[in-house]
Amino acid sequence: MSIVTIVVVTLPWGRLPERKYMQHRRAWALTAATVVLLGTAGIALFARFSNDDPKPAAAPSASSSPARVLVPGKPGESASVTDADHVQPPDASPYNKADVTYAQMMIAHHAQALQMADLVPDRAADQGVKNIASRITAAQGPEIAILRTWLKDRGQPESDPAHDHATMPGMQSAAALTDLGAARGADFDRRFVTMMTEHHRGALQMVDVLFKSGSEERLAKMAKETAIEQDIEIRRMADLGVS
Image (tube, rainbow, N blue to C red; front, top):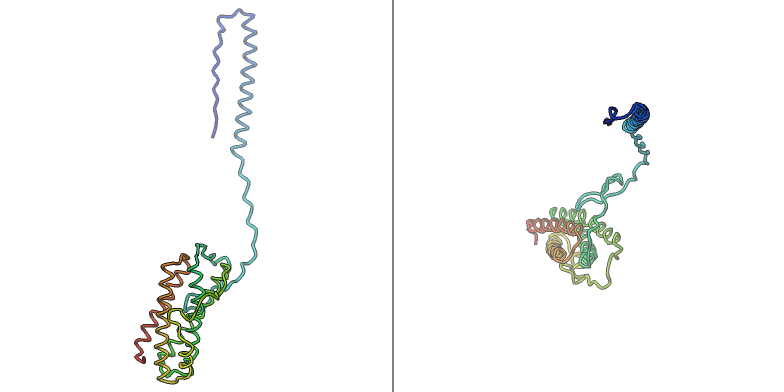
């Protein structure tokens, strides 16, 4: 970019006497020289600033290697290890009492399902029942861990003494669990399928309550996955034909 300044001066030479003419001529010459000098200096100064290269950006400093963290997998999937800078921060959407209650009660609900599934290897006769039990263990164990972490991250207790877990939908009585543990073979398969189907349907009811009353987006997404898993298992148990 350049700047050109043109100064036009009109002098009344023809109207002045010779003495005045010479005085004025010297004055205007000095003025013109000053204008030229200042203009030249200004142009040079402008050119210097316009052509200066910007200071180079500071080179980024080398950072230390990111920490390795354990990331829980989705229901039914194994956990994985990755760099801390590849992990998305926990969802910060608001939660309410219904969210907390669901997480606390589903931990206890899943725990009973795992208790029933643990009886299967030594008692079941049907391979389909054994497969269902393995699926339940693989899915609900990690889900309990995720729910515990969800509560801990929000400063909430894992359980609430005010909750009566025995009254949760689908929960089996202590007497029924005792009878299940005493059964073997086809009798065990029949009891297991009947009890676990009721248990899963109860979990679906709890998920439905969360959808209506909860507000935390991440928990709702997990609950939806839980509902899908358990609905599939209900259908598979029905197809076994042992009830």
